[in-house]
Image (cartoon, rainbow, N blue to C red):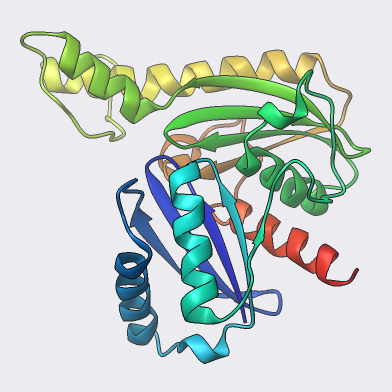
Amino acid sequence: MLAAIDVGNTNTVVGFFDGERLVTQFRLASHRTSTTDEVACLLFGLMRMEGLTEDRVEAAVIASVVPPLTSVFSGWAERWLKVRPMVVGPETPTGIAVHYSSPRDVGADRIVNAVAGHARYPGADLVIVDFGTATTFDAVTVTGDYLGGVIVPGVTVSLDALFMRTAKLPRVDVVRPDTVIGRDTVHSIQSGAFYGYLSMVEGLVARMKAELNDPVRVVATGGLASLLCGDSTAIDEVLPDLTLQGLRLIWERNARG
């Protein structure tokens, strides 16, 4: 089996593949002070609940945007799984040509998403929207060129900032209100968070599509993708496991030599 590890600023997702099949996945909080032993204790407990044992894992691949946790999860793989993980970085062959002015500045997760998106839609230009701590928009051409994109604060980051920078506004959850016009303060904030953010996404997608070549497919991923984009006509497909699938593809391409 392959352990695919996506280390994000808020959450870390660990998936286990049997060939191309994603057997199971776990979502952990990305605590920067976590130790390798703590991660091992938590993950092995979760694995055993799913009937998985460490001896079944033969390889590991990691994409991380949190440097302190890169070594933690690498150490988990080396010490406890007895495998040397592949850590996706600027020198990793991915099949995607990066056209950022400084390619090293592109987060590993964004390139991994580009690999998975291009494999799923090889005959179209792509816009990939990833709803994480930050929401990223990435443009990938039909020839596999990563052109760049857009970065905006994630919806939960925006809500946290609103709560912390105001005296009377409450902290609220991200939900889909029945109406846009709010009838109380909580409803009004939720409407702004959901419909305002969705409108921003749809507006940026439209502007990015105008700079690409038809046909353009739009894919959404990340923790809030299903909630925010479930009924949006701007999104062609919501793929919650896009990053894990991209990690699997990168590992397979490099494992074949």
